[in-house]
Image (cartoon, rainbow, N blue to C red; front, side, top):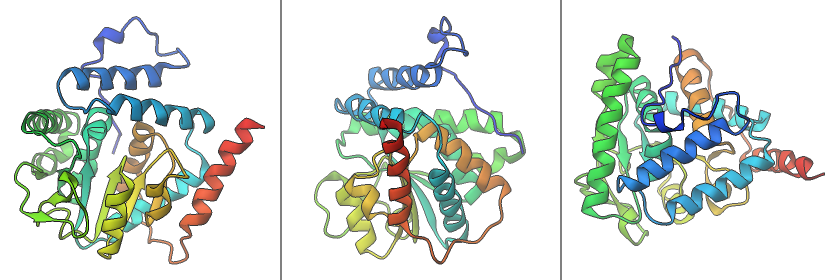
Length: 266
């Protein structure tokens, strides 16, 4: 199966040639500013994105070997799950919502919106964006369009709570995050990651900061830029049949990623 990408909504960046060394970064920034204008993002979202870009510079804006291994491990664990779910926030929807929906279709699992700065208007904007991305994905992947169209988009009416977690992010769906055994969480925050781990769940995260509480708490941490990482993950989910590594060492994975960054500074 061929991986496809869409740059719908980024036409205004047409004066930036694809050969530009910062093209991918500029396109990501454009997606973020468009999402902010559409009411999908909290005010702090662009700050968080910029902080992530700084760490990506230290990776050389490439997917390192440690990240490749973590992507394979994440793919294997999600394929082996009894009930997996992909949890998304505003930044994840803006940057890679369509690709994450396709991942969910391959896994036959739901996508659940879970955000800290939760307002009715923002939830409506995110859910509407995901529905649009779902239709777009079905057009780009006609061979699995039925599976894509069937992906449940959760978040509108949470009926459960994550124990020992305060604030809006504790709200979740009983048929989504609450009952899942494996959760993929791009761009997570540390306290929810800790709460999910305490529930006995396998938590796979995408985090450019290998020193963050999220990165250090998660079961598997992919230290990579979100859009680059999700494209590779989707390929692994579509093509690869491989079991998880019983000897997976996430601390070593983080140390390997950190060493890549430190070599950049030498």
